Length: 331
Image (tube, rainbow, N blue to C red; front, side, top):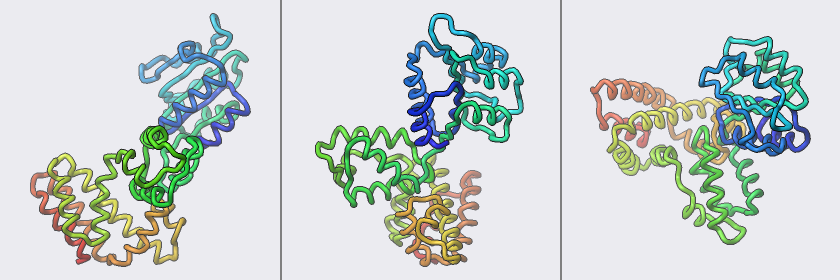
């Protein structure tokens, strides 16, 4: 169950077993806190077990199955639970979860969960599972609409486009970053409307976003700008891996876009295929025909070679400069 549906479900009925799984810790933390709220239990009264501390599974099961002593409820939070992905299993844990005491509740958190596991199926049957996946670029508009509604704001067309251009280029987006930034904006913007100037003044740019300026310059054939951005980035040689990643990903997306466009895949469908915001996908549709498949395939190999030679001390910034120039000039 996704985050939005999970939170709605908590308003309807509370259950005795929950699994909060996935990479997006913001969703997991919010869901966990709402469960505590619905159970009317203080965090200090929750029994917390961190499986990273190598707690024996027998001890975990005993804690979950224990009757409460000083409180009306026994609420157990089991963090980093390995039971939903690892090979180890416990028939006793399975039986306890299938026959939870009326006074007992358990919340498992895990970075990943295998739906084929018996324990996962048991939790799905007797409780609820949250799949806390990171926000994807094509989901950005929906997130923004929900957030604006929650803070009582509207946004101008120019501001929305700016937001999509800056954030929508990322394959995965930090919810913590977005939530914090928009809470700050809601406090700093006096009126109900958020303008382009409001965003530019208040929205801190994610570190990763600035690296995509080089691909913007390349697509626009602004050779001098692209080379200058590259040189600025490479003042710190530790940025080499990040620059290589950005360039290789961009070339790979261009190649994929050429394939999809050839097969009449456009618009929102293209955005989903490329895992990018629809606004960025529209820009891709315009720029892709300016690149030849032969050039992109050649550059993709050159980027891989540059990565190898740089790491072995046989190449410098000039190697990347030549690649950037070739992409800008399309030659």
